Length: 304
Image (cartoon, rainbow, N blue to C red; front, side, top):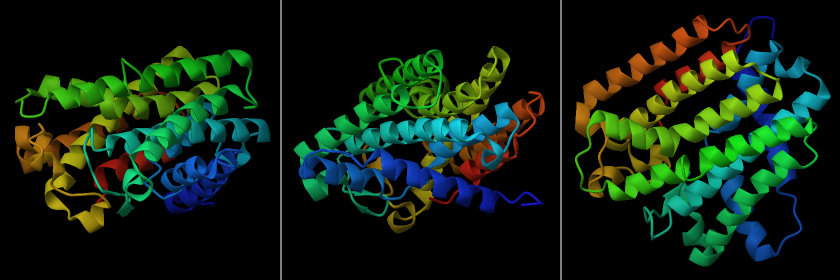
């Protein structure tokens, strides 16, 4: 790639990531547990979070992934797989009847529809714990980095992160939230795992505090933009394009950026957040930011 090509970069990184995730799911487990785990995790998806992990590692190290040491490449791929395992577990649980009660995810039947609620619940639980096994096992990193990884992911996924956001989401049905309240909810529900994905990649490359602060701010911008675009697509795209049920937010009387700002206002807000994210990279001093910029663009411009 003499002239940098995001499509080529993305395909190379995705090929490496899918192989790493497949290896992570080569487990000794009962078939009625392993099958729904693999169905949910290997069934496609945008893979935004693992790609952000790989891109953040490049940004801090200043070296493209294909030029990194084998030790670092293996380690950061395991971290990327861990982030995706937690993300997939959250989707499985989010789709359950006790939560959003959805029957389609990534263009096909949700895990509980195909395998039953009990098996879906257990598959989600097992994917969550697998993530920490990946981070703490033979990851090619020093023990202090592995500990930092585990703490970072635990905070992002737990009671001050993703789970907190889900709890706020449940409590906000039928409630008119202002912009600050809506952003606080989504900073936890969606943004926490996105900033975590960036942090894990940066930590693998031994980022300093200033770099971590910059990438955290960048992640908050694109995490918020991701949710704003989700709200826009929920009212503008159909279910086949989205790969999940369209119009669910309005049907469930949930607060959204479209409801708060109007359709055009929400679209402009996503554009503004994208601009802020790029400015953070401009001011950061990070040398290898092409992939991060392209992923930020993808978050805002996506149609599904």
